[in-house]
Amino acid sequence: MNFLCLAMGIMLMLPLRQIPVIQNGTHLKAQKQTLVFEEDLRLGPANLPEEHLFVGVNVSVDADAAGNIYIADGASNRVLVFSPEGGFLRQIGRAGEGPGEFLALRRFEVLTQGGALAFEGMQHLSRINWFDTQYKFARVSQRNNRIHRIKDWRGSPDGQTFACELVRIDTVSKRLVTRFLLTDGALNEQAEFGHFSQEEFDTTRVRDQSYWVTYLAAFFVRELKGQRGYFSFRLDNGVYTAMGGAYEVTQWNAQAMPIRKIVRRVRPVLLDEASRRAAVAFEHERLLSELPPDLHQVVTLAVVERAFRDAKLPQVKPPIYGLLAMEKGFIVVGDQKMGSGTCRGDLFSEEGAFLGSFSHELLSLRNMVFKNGFAYTIGRDSEGENVMVRWRPSLRDIK
Image (tube, rainbow, N blue to C red; front, top):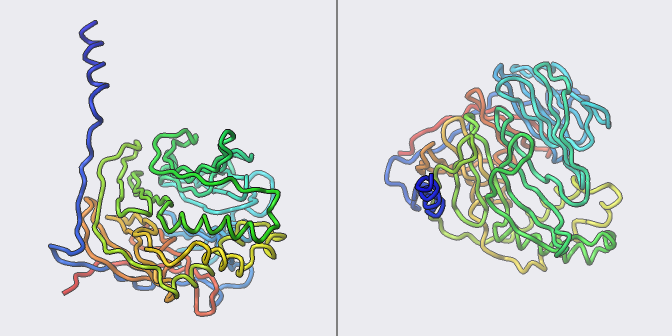
């Protein structure tokens, strides 16, 4: 017994198993590939009645194994369900405070074994709603206080693991701490893959525009330093994670154990004036979606503009702006050309080998979901209105 205890003690003192690191350079050694999108279906103002439109910035899309399309509309707090051909089928939920109703709908995700999860998040409210195989409300997990909340969230295809951005107030230091976590289905922490802290927001100055400028300027500096976490689940319930400040992606298995790290060398890119102006407009729209209407006249476009100026731009852009898990392989969302509305996507194999790059519309790429051989996304039409587009993606060699 003593020998066994000694052996276990020695094992605990040994360093943890080092996961393999897949190194990728700026140039390919093998055949370069790109990703081509062929539009297959479009739903929006051109072919939907007004009562079935989805507006604002808090809109997401998912699909089930039969090809039915689920669009979560945060503005109307409902989920619109369409057939694979684009015909309206039903509505799930509505605005309200009762079971199966939504106050701040952000995402609706269909589970592989049937049923779905809906995430709500606004100010100090964050909750996860569970729906059964008939999409009837089953139960809810809720957080509603000033100490901590879930700001961003994704669920694994089987609903057993979550990736989230958790914000809490450190009551001792009076600072706001943001952590990027993998948790189990009960929101118990399994692993952290990034964190940062900032000054707590002074609610007594919520109507002070000069305070908003100072607070947002510090936020934008953090964003440009890459203090932002990204995550995307694979169909096998594993997950890719990254922090925006370094071109490093960690792949985890379904048990939240890291299995490899993927690294790529890239040249630094400066934030130009066109990208800065587009980023100002995007951040202003995002803020309005999170703030109550009475603050929209306080946090104006001019306030966001001043905050960007005070952040002392230009600076080098973060190398990563998002992650997408394809059905085979994954995508790193890279350089945003916000003035043109496009960005670069870097393609990687399941084993982490860099395959090539492509360009796509920025908003569309950032919220894309790959299922059933298709890519589903929410984009904008020529009038700036939301549309759901289903694409047929295909890998092609570049000669």
